[in-house]
Length: 219
Image (cartoon, rainbow, N blue to C red; front, side, top):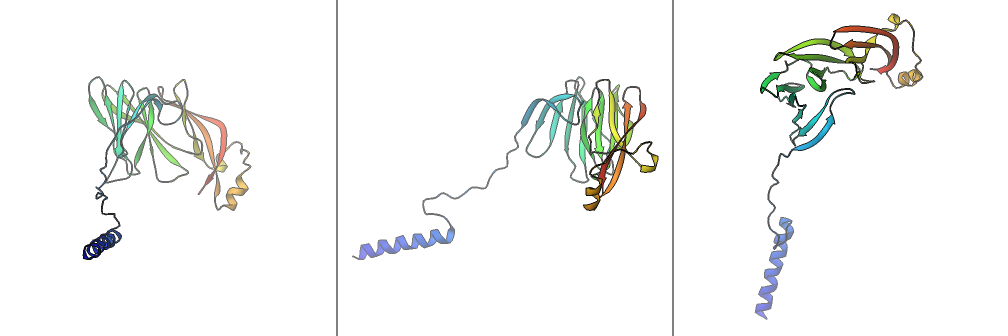
Protein backbone atom coordinates (compact mmCIF):
# COMPACT_ATOMS: atom_id res chain seq x y z
CA UNK A 1 0.00 0.00 0.00
CA UNK A 2 2.83 2.35 0.87
CA UNK A 3 4.49 1.53 -2.43
CA UNK A 4 1.29 2.45 -4.33
CA UNK A 5 0.99 5.74 -2.44
CA UNK A 6 4.62 6.61 -3.12
CA UNK A 7 4.21 5.83 -6.81
CA UNK A 8 1.07 7.96 -6.95
CA UNK A 9 2.82 10.87 -5.29
CA UNK A 10 5.69 10.59 -7.77
CA UNK A 11 3.28 10.61 -10.72
CA UNK A 12 1.44 13.62 -9.27
CA UNK A 13 4.71 15.51 -8.88
CA UNK A 14 5.64 14.81 -12.48
CA UNK A 15 2.26 16.06 -13.72
CA UNK A 16 2.56 19.28 -11.70
CA UNK A 17 6.05 19.86 -13.11
CA UNK A 18 4.77 19.26 -16.64
CA UNK A 19 1.93 21.77 -16.22
CA UNK A 20 4.27 24.41 -14.83
CA UNK A 21 6.86 23.96 -17.53
CA UNK A 22 4.42 23.48 -20.40
CA UNK A 23 6.10 20.21 -21.34
CA UNK A 24 5.48 16.53 -20.78
CA UNK A 25 8.13 14.50 -18.91
CA UNK A 26 8.98 12.51 -22.02
CA UNK A 27 9.23 15.46 -24.43
CA UNK A 28 12.70 16.61 -25.34
CA UNK A 29 13.55 20.29 -24.80
CA UNK A 30 13.05 22.52 -27.84
CA UNK A 31 16.21 23.76 -29.48
CA UNK A 32 16.36 27.34 -30.81
CA UNK A 33 15.70 27.60 -34.54
CA UNK A 34 18.78 28.08 -36.65
CA UNK A 35 18.49 30.77 -39.32
CA UNK A 36 19.62 29.32 -42.61
CA UNK A 37 20.45 31.47 -45.61
CA UNK A 38 19.40 29.59 -48.70
CA UNK A 39 19.60 30.57 -52.38
CA UNK A 40 16.47 31.08 -54.43
CA UNK A 41 17.02 30.93 -58.17
CA UNK A 42 14.81 31.87 -61.07
CA UNK A 43 16.21 31.43 -64.56
CA UNK A 44 15.45 33.74 -67.48
CA UNK A 45 13.54 36.18 -65.28
CA UNK A 46 12.65 39.79 -66.03
CA UNK A 47 13.68 42.19 -63.31
CA UNK A 48 12.52 45.77 -63.60
CA UNK A 49 10.04 47.23 -66.03
CA UNK A 50 8.95 46.02 -69.45
CA UNK A 51 11.69 45.81 -72.06
CA UNK A 52 14.55 45.28 -69.59
CA UNK A 53 16.94 42.38 -70.17
CA UNK A 54 16.25 38.99 -68.66
CA UNK A 55 18.77 37.17 -66.49
CA UNK A 56 19.31 34.52 -63.85
CA UNK A 57 17.87 35.85 -60.60
CA UNK A 58 19.37 34.48 -57.39
CA UNK A 59 18.28 35.64 -53.91
CA UNK A 60 18.94 34.61 -50.33
CA UNK A 61 16.78 34.69 -47.21
CA UNK A 62 18.47 37.88 -45.97
CA UNK A 63 16.97 39.88 -48.85
CA UNK A 64 20.13 40.29 -50.93
CA UNK A 65 20.02 39.19 -54.56
CA UNK A 66 22.18 38.86 -57.65
CA UNK A 67 21.21 38.89 -61.31
CA UNK A 68 23.47 37.30 -63.90
CA UNK A 69 23.03 38.77 -67.37
CA UNK A 70 25.89 37.01 -69.14
CA UNK A 71 28.04 40.10 -69.71
CA UNK A 72 27.26 41.66 -66.35
CA UNK A 73 26.48 40.45 -62.88
CA UNK A 74 24.56 42.86 -60.65
CA UNK A 75 24.68 42.40 -56.86
CA UNK A 76 22.09 44.17 -54.71
CA UNK A 77 21.64 44.28 -50.95
CA UNK A 78 19.94 46.53 -48.43
CA UNK A 79 21.89 49.45 -47.03
CA UNK A 80 21.95 49.22 -43.21
CA UNK A 81 23.01 52.85 -42.70
CA UNK A 82 20.85 54.73 -45.21
CA UNK A 83 17.72 54.34 -47.36
CA UNK A 84 18.02 52.47 -50.60
CA UNK A 85 20.24 49.64 -51.74
CA UNK A 86 23.92 48.99 -52.27
CA UNK A 87 24.27 48.18 -55.98
CA UNK A 88 27.38 46.82 -57.66
CA UNK A 89 27.73 45.89 -61.34
CA UNK A 90 30.45 43.35 -62.12
CA UNK A 91 31.92 42.94 -65.59
CA UNK A 92 31.87 39.19 -65.84
CA UNK A 93 34.83 38.81 -68.24
CA UNK A 94 37.26 40.75 -66.02
CA UNK A 95 35.65 40.65 -62.58
CA UNK A 96 35.86 44.45 -62.35
CA UNK A 97 33.44 45.83 -59.76
CA UNK A 98 31.55 49.06 -60.47
CA UNK A 99 29.71 50.36 -57.37
CA UNK A 100 26.81 52.68 -58.07
CA UNK A 101 27.20 56.06 -56.34
CA UNK A 102 24.99 56.54 -53.27
CA UNK A 103 22.19 59.09 -53.49
CA UNK A 104 20.45 60.92 -50.65
CA UNK A 105 16.97 59.79 -51.68
CA UNK A 106 18.02 56.13 -51.66
CA UNK A 107 18.41 54.23 -54.92
CA UNK A 108 16.72 50.96 -55.91
CA UNK A 109 17.85 48.83 -58.82
CA UNK A 110 15.23 48.63 -61.58
CA UNK A 111 16.88 46.47 -64.21
CA UNK A 112 19.09 47.03 -67.25
CA UNK A 113 19.04 47.17 -71.05
CA UNK A 114 22.29 46.28 -72.82
CA UNK A 115 24.93 48.41 -71.05
CA UNK A 116 22.40 50.82 -69.49
CA UNK A 117 21.28 50.42 -65.87
CA UNK A 118 18.18 51.92 -64.23
CA UNK A 119 17.96 53.06 -60.60
CA UNK A 120 14.73 54.37 -59.06
CA UNK A 121 14.94 56.92 -56.25
CA UNK A 122 12.77 59.21 -54.17
CA UNK A 123 10.43 59.23 -51.21
CA UNK A 124 7.10 60.26 -52.75
CA UNK A 125 4.84 57.43 -53.96
CA UNK A 126 3.21 59.39 -56.80
CA UNK A 127 6.29 61.02 -58.37
CA UNK A 128 9.63 59.24 -58.58
CA UNK A 129 13.04 59.89 -60.10
CA UNK A 130 14.91 57.60 -62.44
CA UNK A 131 18.67 57.63 -62.90
CA UNK A 132 20.12 56.03 -66.03
CA UNK A 133 23.73 54.82 -65.95
CA UNK A 134 25.90 53.54 -68.76
CA UNK A 135 28.94 51.27 -68.57
CA UNK A 136 31.59 52.02 -71.14
CA UNK A 137 35.21 50.82 -71.13
CA UNK A 138 35.02 49.80 -67.50
CA UNK A 139 33.60 53.13 -66.27
CA UNK A 140 30.08 53.78 -65.02
CA UNK A 141 28.53 57.09 -66.14
CA UNK A 142 25.22 58.69 -65.22
CA UNK A 143 23.74 59.74 -68.55
CA UNK A 144 20.20 60.82 -67.64
CA UNK A 145 17.90 61.68 -64.76
CA UNK A 146 14.18 62.38 -64.94
CA UNK A 147 11.04 62.52 -62.84
CA UNK A 148 8.35 60.05 -63.81
CA UNK A 149 4.87 58.97 -62.76
CA UNK A 150 4.85 55.35 -61.50
CA UNK A 151 1.10 55.15 -62.07
CA UNK A 152 2.09 53.79 -65.48
CA UNK A 153 5.52 52.18 -65.28
CA UNK A 154 8.26 53.14 -67.76
CA UNK A 155 9.29 50.72 -70.48
CA UNK A 156 12.12 50.25 -72.94
CA UNK A 157 11.03 49.88 -76.55
CA UNK A 158 12.54 47.43 -79.01
CA UNK A 159 14.51 50.30 -80.57
CA UNK A 160 16.07 51.31 -77.26
CA UNK A 161 13.91 54.27 -76.22
CA UNK A 162 12.83 54.80 -72.62
CA UNK A 163 9.08 55.55 -72.61
CA UNK A 164 7.57 57.18 -69.54
CA UNK A 165 5.17 59.87 -68.34
CA UNK A 166 6.75 62.97 -66.83
CA UNK A 167 4.72 65.23 -64.50
CA UNK A 168 3.42 68.39 -66.15
CA UNK A 169 1.34 71.34 -64.99
CA UNK A 170 -2.21 71.60 -66.30
CA UNK A 171 -1.53 75.02 -67.82
CA UNK A 172 1.34 73.62 -69.91
CA UNK A 173 -0.70 70.96 -71.68
CA UNK A 174 -1.84 71.45 -75.24
CA UNK A 175 -4.86 69.24 -74.67
CA UNK A 176 -6.46 68.10 -71.43
CA UNK A 177 -6.94 64.31 -71.29
CA UNK A 178 -10.18 62.61 -70.35
CA UNK A 179 -10.10 61.80 -66.64
CA UNK A 180 -13.24 59.87 -65.56
CA UNK A 181 -11.94 59.11 -62.05
CA UNK A 182 -11.04 62.70 -61.15
CA UNK A 183 -14.13 63.35 -59.02
CA UNK A 184 -13.59 60.20 -56.96
CA UNK A 185 -9.95 61.10 -56.37
CA UNK A 186 -11.01 64.48 -55.02
CA UNK A 187 -13.55 62.82 -52.71
CA UNK A 188 -10.72 60.63 -51.41
CA UNK A 189 -8.70 63.70 -50.51
CA UNK A 190 -6.37 63.53 -53.50
CA UNK A 191 -5.77 65.97 -56.32
CA UNK A 192 -5.57 65.39 -60.03
CA UNK A 193 -2.11 65.36 -61.57
CA UNK A 194 -1.07 65.17 -65.19
CA UNK A 195 1.73 63.56 -67.14
CA UNK A 196 3.18 63.98 -70.62
CA UNK A 197 4.57 61.10 -72.64
CA UNK A 198 8.31 61.35 -73.21
CA UNK A 199 10.73 59.18 -75.16
CA UNK A 200 14.41 59.19 -74.37
CA UNK A 201 16.63 57.47 -76.93
CA UNK A 202 19.22 55.73 -74.76
CA UNK A 203 21.89 55.37 -77.43
CA UNK A 204 21.49 58.78 -79.09
CA UNK A 205 20.57 60.59 -75.84
CA UNK A 206 17.74 62.41 -77.56
CA UNK A 207 14.53 63.41 -75.79
CA UNK A 208 11.18 63.64 -77.56
CA UNK A 209 8.07 65.17 -75.96
CA UNK A 210 4.84 63.84 -77.42
CA UNK A 211 1.43 65.50 -77.36
CA UNK A 212 0.09 62.58 -75.35
CA UNK A 213 -1.16 63.16 -71.82
CA UNK A 214 -2.56 61.20 -68.90
CA UNK A 215 -4.11 61.99 -65.54
CA UNK A 216 -3.14 60.41 -62.24
CA UNK A 217 -4.09 60.75 -58.55
CA UNK A 218 -1.64 62.90 -56.57
CA UNK A 219 -1.25 63.47 -52.85
